[in-house]
Image 1 (cartoon, rainbow over the protein chains, first blue to last red):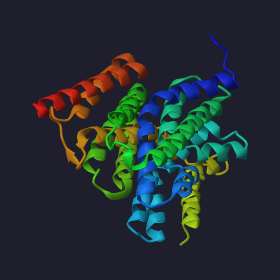
Image 2: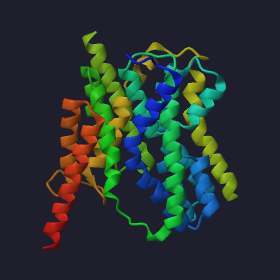
Image 3: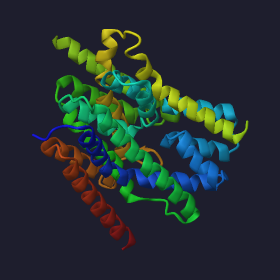
Length: 230
Length: 111
């Protein structure tokens, strides 16, 4: 067996994150092009990716800015759209609670859907190592680099960017590839099925609130199924 | 509000949400049921993100027919993921079938 080191964990995270980048890069470019179209300017468009660093919230924010919405509405939208990250925060916290504050700050800044998805499914399936945070850091920094470069590309290409990218379909495909292997007990299967059906039913609700409700329902169903057999 | 202040506040809000429980857990004892609930987060959230992305076509309608290549290739990907547990096989086969169906659709539409 290979020995697990900081560097093997870090590069494991980088490698684990690479396939999903095919799906993320188109969104980064679309964001960059949309930000320019909304009249945001080159420097602010890129800075938003650095400061906010949250794909769907950035899309909504620049659209609202372009439509002349008030700052309060924009901030509220950012808050509600990103609320799901509180769940990610709670779910990775046990794995990194022994770390120094600076590590926690860095890993929190890098905690996006795609980095979380790759790291948590790895944590749930693989044996415990003392260097797990390096894996999460590897996924996070890889996604971060991709998001920054693809934003820049989108800003540069601007309106000449095509509007549909078949490769963006890699994103849901990778989520499938990550989730299915963690569905090993009845309770997790029940959580996944109920959450995905509720997600479809509530998809029309604004600002990802349907997603939040669907996730909450899935968690409750999972706990219920788990508690029933105990 | 100044654009830069707005972005800064947006960043602070996002960071605070992501930092929230990472900061709290370990400092404050969390109830047992809460930690149990959090083990279902990956399965629940990632599934709730994924299925709508597959069955809904752009204007937001649910389409479970042959006209929606995402749905066909997505279901195939679930099967492949279940049998192989391989990211490469799942994404590779799903994407190949998706692109094939898209191409077929284009071909039939332009004829």
